[in-house]
Length: 270
Ligand SMILES: Cc1cc2nc3c(=O)[nH]c(=O)nc-3n(C[C@H](O)[C@H](O)[C@H](O)COP(=O)(O)OP(=O)(O)OC[C@H]3O[C@@H](n4cnc5c(N)ncnc54)[C@H](O)[C@@H]3O)c2cc1C
Image (cartoon, rainbow, N blue to C red; front, side, top):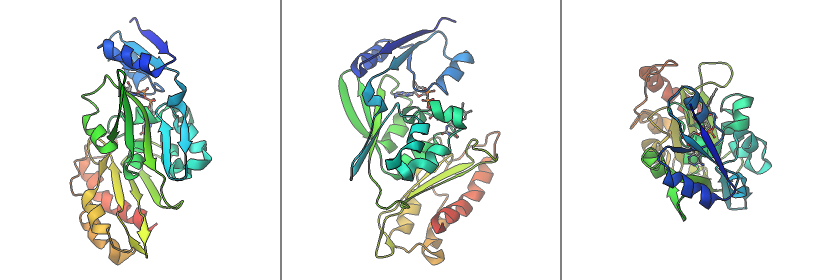
């Protein structure tokens, strides 16, 4: 198996190389890609690495946050301005995985992975993507729908509005193992309130569909309600709407659907 690794200093050169070679794969931290390589699933590929500093940047202003695609989960979990994302970053694998696993790679993680993307979806993130010389921003929800069809682009980073209040973003990952394991299900909820009523909440699930998904029926049922037993009752009733979970060696599709409202209630009532 001959593997060629090409490293580029500049993003534009990396994107050009990726676009010009149909056997090329962009290498993030390699926690998924290198496994695929060793399993013989990639043939004899070219791996494209990029050391452009922009991919490793975290820029957190009072209102907007940018996280470069090459930032690792360990770096997110250690960053003082990203406290609301620490639980999500720390939920991914063990320390060795978190030291390598990148934010960009997580957007491509196959089912049931992609836990960080769930938190980003609840934050209404956009994905900055570059193909050739043309950058563009795509809402994360659209990006996840089309991620398999566009493998010639490089994800540069993600941007979102900084959430109001430290506890405004809630994150829960249910697993079957005591340490962080693959997700039974993951829920992230951004719950801004106005006068003790929820105002345009955003709720996202992981492992409840092929990729991270918005729970739009839940969001609609929560809007304008209070965060108490009575206020969340309608949301729990529609918790499973639009969900298409899969059975895997961890749990069955049935189990995922059964426990979803239980975990959603736990997350919402804190
Ligand atoms: C033991 C173990 C435990 C794990 N546990 C979890 C877990 O609990 N939760 C979870 O969500 N994931 C988990 N994962 C999966 C994985 O580690 C993470 O999802 C991680 O974030 C993937 O990032 P990476 O940088 O390693 O991706 P890579 O392996 O480098 O790449 C994965 C895919 O994304 C593409 N890609 C990567 N970066 C870019 C970019 N900037 N632009 C375009 N394409 C890109 C690659 O070409 C490849 O197709 C686990 C993996 C292992 C091995």
